[in-house]
Image 1 (cartoon, helix red, strand yellow):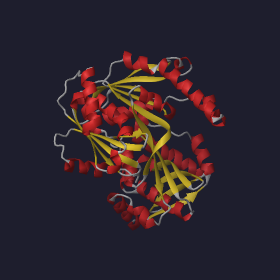
Image 2 (tube, rainbow, N blue to C red):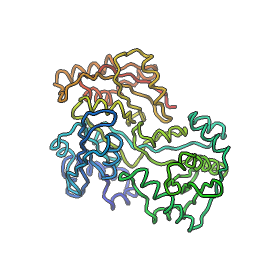
Image 3 (cartoon, rainbow, N blue to C red):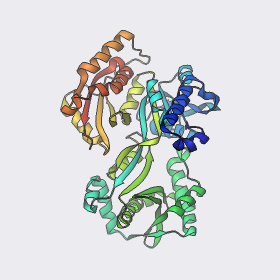
Image 4 (tube, rainbow, N blue to C red):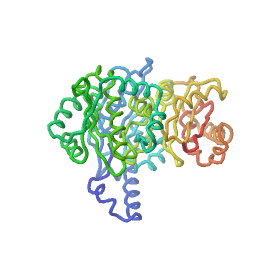
Length: 434
């Protein structure tokens, strides 16, 4: 992950705002121009292989840590794609890397303060998502916001002999960390796992506590939590020896359900369920959304996505991985669909399927699949398509949207440049801040 210098990261909040802004801008200009490589380094990977759900080949340049490279490979590719480390802890500039290495996609994971500068380099900004659950309202209202599947799981939990305890006994932390957390995380995420060290877990434990779930008198799952003001953060989740059948029986749902109940009885108003990547196809994203949680852009890290070749493989990647983009007016769901029928009723099910609490709107991009493997967009076509997007193809389902067109142009121009002649239509649906 691209981060600020450690010394600067720890003192930046004590620096006056104007000075801090100047330092940040100087750092990021240096990062993009090549000056920054003299004092910073990161990893660069080239992933090659066949995509999931098809035999089409896709080349992706990934800039970030090795765990993120493995995460992206697992999300997008079939089997075990080739992950080639091009540079490891080597100084570089983003402009030189993306021009020297030819790939269909470029994905950068960076600190959030680089968002503006990645955007200026024609990257679409995808913030990592922090999910929170508002528990300040009565329990009936909290559970009513959850999906039908999740409500059925809670009913099943109530019928079984689940129970829980809140503990601050150090030996139980040892049991949770080594018998629940580590086996589960390693088995679930493999090489993409970002493991919390025992030292960090112990620090969280001292500031918070441990919720252990029991079934028939045996510990089957647990959550390490930490309260802060009116919020309880769920820091680490684990299952006994990481057995999948325990998860299937509802131990994971039971842990979260009991944490909600306990937090409400203690007077807390919100639960922070932590970060996940901004891809709606990610199982963790889907799971958290099913609990009625609200998506909030992380202040720490973002992904930058850039398309070099809008070929069939890229279209399939975009359509299979709807994502969350960051814009000036808030978070937007960005969905690419291979749709030839542009009637409104065709788009409406997409809005319902991908709606996530916290999104200001859903943007659906209808694209043609008739592309060549090396399509390029000349300047006259690009200008014509830009005007088409600005003036004709932006269809809003809310009168409020029509007044926002000027602010929408940035993301729409990126989409048209990305899709080129394969762009059929862009439709938006506003949630009016819900």
